[in-house]
Amino acid sequence: MEMSFYTGKLGASAQQTRLDVVANNIANVNTAGYKSKSLCFSDLMYNNMAGVDGQDSNVMSGSGVKPEKTNISFENGSVNFSDSQLDFSIEGPGFFALQNPQTKEYYYTRNGSFVLSEKEDGFYLASKEGYFVIGKNGDPIRIKAGNTEVTGEETDKDGNPLEGEAVALEDAEPAVFNFPKLEGMLSIGDSNFIPVEKNGESFLVEAKVTRGSFEGSNVDIAKEFAKVVEAQRAYQYSLRMVKTTDEIQELTNNLRQ
Image (cartoon, rainbow, N blue to C red):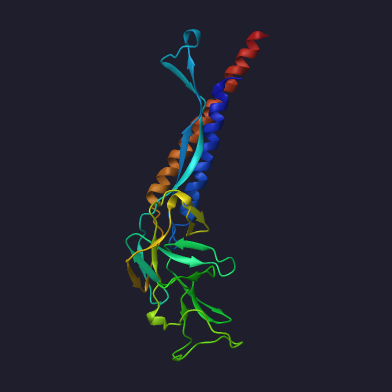
């Protein structure tokens, strides 16, 4: 079978994957803290054509492309103002740190639209997934209930001492962390990220955190629709290559008869 048949098939498959990535970006245009993604391709094997005795020639034939990786754009999104004291936005680089209360695993996000989560030992500042927000002392931020001032050592309902000091809601401020490198971070859910080894260790940064606002998506809807048109055209050309190759093969087989 002609290599052009397989090249066209691989091209169509790659463009379909690209459309899936773009569609995900468009679907999350209003998701707080969402970072747009773009698909990168890599060339498959090339071989020489019309080479003498296996020597290299100036005529090369490719075998198509394949999706290699998905890049994440960490550019800041638009700032949306709200009346909630539970919303925070970061000016400049950095992430809020979240802790999964079940697994103790840490996630990092630009989505500062938080809520209060009630646990057995009190109220915590948390993400909408229920993950605790980390404060500057490295512990989850625990909020004092109501306007009651708590004095002395705090205990839970069983009389056990609580870890960390509860703060008034107006004094709660999430810590901001950053990494030496951002490339290659794993996207978890809509707006959370997990660092990998090459990102290095997280470090605390002094960043301006604004209460009463949260960062929106950084998706540029106009650019995404332009990518849709590009991917659709490339998909059509790839299918046309498959169709043309099939017609040539059919014509060749008829001539042999």
